[in-house]
Amino acid sequence: MVMTLSRNEYLEDYYSYSPGESAVFIGPTGTGKTVFAQQCLDAAMSQNPHLSVSTAMPKPADDQTVEWAGRSDFKITRVIQRPDPLC
Image (cartoon, rainbow, N blue to C red):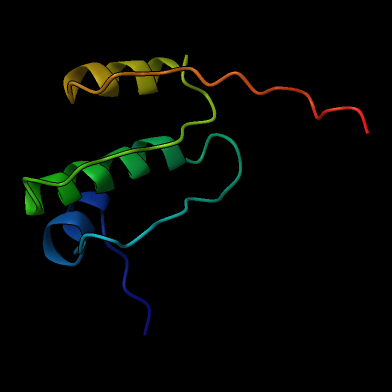
């Protein structure tokens, strides 16, 4: 049996997060991974009001990420990746 749910149905009726769990969102470009990850994190924070959060977003300048960070009162810190040292 295959059950199809809207994101809201899934988040409201089935999604449950316990502190210490991790999640990874993988899929092709443009399939809504960033939005869904943010919706899951919003739900996890609602379920766990004292939850400390740290996320790694590969595209911190993305409009969706910036809007969500502002709405959630998150600080965006850019991490500069250094090239591998020469051996």
